[in-house]
Length: 143
Image (cartoon, rainbow, N blue to C red; front, side, top):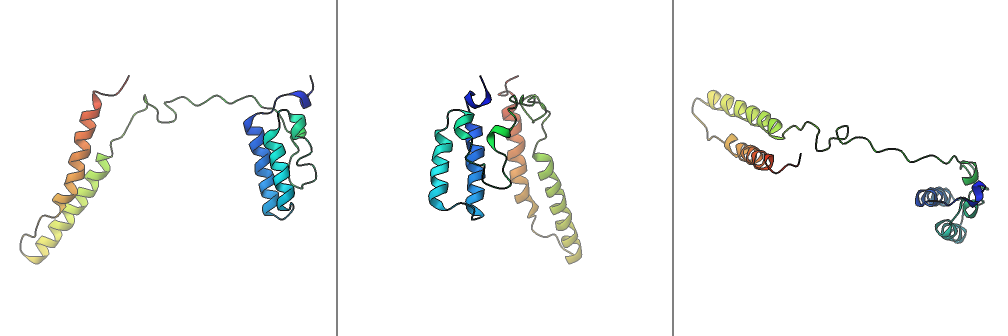
């Protein structure tokens, strides 16, 4: 069986439709011709059905000249931050914000000569909630 008889996939049809949309945006196709070609692209079953839809458009690769590539293997979960990947708690960043706010509070209290209202305590609330959520979720993770 030749390439023209091979079944086209959803990604092949979408790629042709995207290239047709670009041609419409550039003014190379009018709306009626674009609509007709997109309908043909989405109705295509084989590469032969997709042939000819892009041939007269510059800067596009006709489907019959494109290479059929095997599907790529998905990266491992560890590489993408999957369930086995080491995790950092958002609490470390919140703790840094709390420390900076406390330093600002301390400097303003010292410069005024009296203890000011301890407003960094409000920044401490999300930090405590994040730490509690972390410990609550530890036992629920699937290994």
